[in-house]
Length: 106
Image (cartoon, rainbow, N blue to C red; front, top):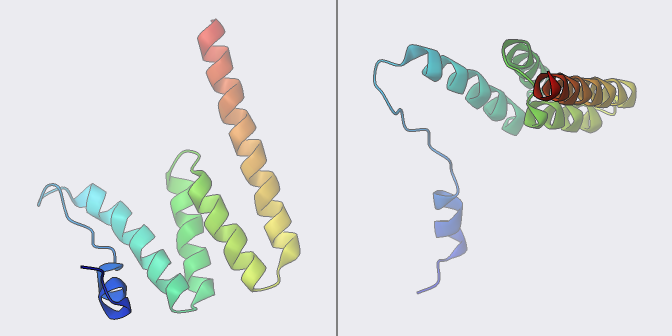
């Protein structure tokens, strides 16, 4: 039986289920990304930007974070900032590829 539009909207909400009840470090990382996504959905782009940048500093290269920031900057028509984050993402990706290549051929 096909779902109605209302049922699809209700089921499209993502839920995070903790794997371990006492894993505070994992919950904290999930919370930062979850808060950033919620802020973006609520059009609080300044908070979303702050949280995504915070997560970028904590984690190794993650293309999804760069993509989210690019979208936020584009929505705000901050094209120079968008270009800067594109260039920063490309540099980070190339640095990662370079370090992997060096490690392989040592």
